[in-house]
Length: 125
Image 1 (cartoon, one colour):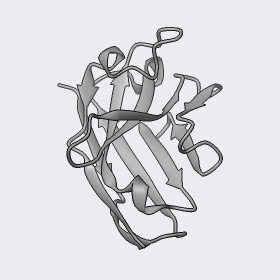
Image 2 (cartoon, one colour):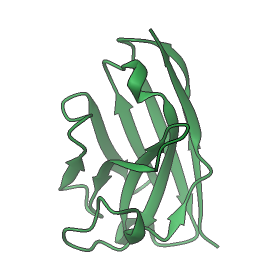
Image 3 (spheres, helix red, strand yellow):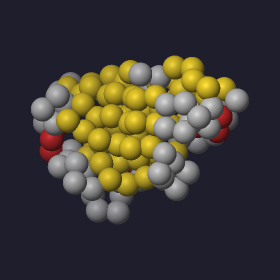
Image 4 (cartoon, one colour):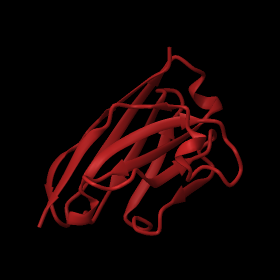
């Protein structure tokens, strides 16, 4: 059974930083791409960042490029999302996900077959 458990969310002031973690179990972690998505109240879930199985390639939404960094530690079965210069519009529930490494598809929710329960990030102005 595949499980993804996020942690590290919380309340932070605008301009602050947080690091989210996602611990995975139940599948060969290093064989799959990992992604972070977020969902704000009343909005659809949107892509934030993704990383290939090796960690060699990363992808970001334009809204977070230059502020967020995705990384992974395959020895620890964990993916991270470092978030700097946070803005109130970054407020959302953040989800990690795991899925096949399909070229050109890592920004799509449909590519990912397992999801965590989410962690709340709230940025105050």
